[in-house]
Structure formats: structure tokens, C-alpha cells
Length: 226
Image 1 (cartoon, rainbow, N blue to C red):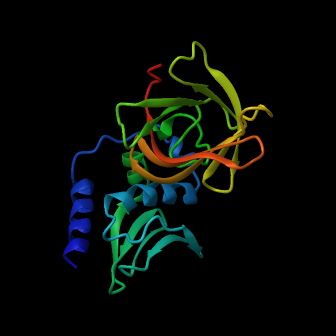
Image 2: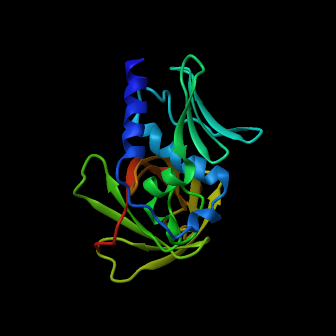
């Protein structure tokens, strides 16, 4: 019960504190499901002991979008433009306006369209990093459209434009296969770490479709340093 009080107190502090809002209204173009996922994805890693296990899928019941956490028997939900936390006793707590949370968590929502991969948007660059070596800077991914991304890695003098497709609700398939030496690549969105960082499962394939390499990495929204 103490942990749940901490969660509610933390959220109350945000709601009553000074927050700079994004006033572009571009979030009005987001669906209710997209807004719910932005909020839920951000809250899960902030409170892993309360929202456990996570990540959980987003479910819909009538006008509710919600996630249920069986270890602690609690829910996160959105309903009529409000965010709700439902505790173990079934008591709902109103945590404020959904758009407030979207602006707070995803300050870039006034820019390009979401591509369907967490908070990633068209026009943004996300740079891959290793958890084991934070100083290592990997591939830069600049999403130029809903089906094209520019890759740039250390030592590359120019970017390489790569087609990609969204598979399901959380995996990007990069068409990097040359038919000889390398196959395609995938990136699977796992959860949002903070406003500018996401956790990603990266897999590289051989031309025959078998797995070449597989690692959990994080992507950071930033300018490409290469």
C-alpha cells in the first residue's frame, strides 16, 4: 500500500507543479489508443514494482483502454480523456488529463507523425547504444517517411536509405538483405525508458533467414554524432 501511495503522490506532484505544455495541438491527431500507449509505456518502467509484470498489452473495454498488472492486481486506464489508476481494492484514482500526460511524456508530439513504434516520429533521429558500453555510439536511424529510414554508422561518409515496414504493433523490419552476405534486420520496441529513450530488441539475420546476432539495446532521440 505504501508503494501505491508513493505512485499517487508522485503523480499529484506533477499535476500541481509547474509544467511547460506543448501548445501545438498536434496531439489532437493522435488516436485514443496511441495516447494511452504513450502514457502506459512511460509509466511502466517508472514504477516496475507496482506495475508488475510489465510490459502488459493494452486492452479495450467499451470506451476504456487499460492495462492490468496481475502481480499487484492494479490497473492503468484511460477513459473520457482522463488517466486512471485503479488500486488493489478496486478504488479508482483520477490522475489528470490525458493530453497533459502526452505533452509531459512526449514533448516531440508537435513534430512528425508517429510511425507506430513507441514515441518514434517521422523526421526524428534515434541513435542506438549498448547497455554494456554507454560510450559506444551505434547506428543512427533517421525516419524520413512511413516506409524509408536513413542509416548512418561510424566510418560511413554518407547515409544509406533503407526501406522498412511495421510488422504487427511493435516491430520494424529493415530491408537490408543483399542476397549474398547479409539478411534483413529487425527492431522490436519493448518499452519507453524516458521521454527520449526506448528499450529495443535488435536482431540481424543471415540471407537464409536464420539469426546472425541478437542484442537488447537502447535508442536515444538525438542528433547523429557520426
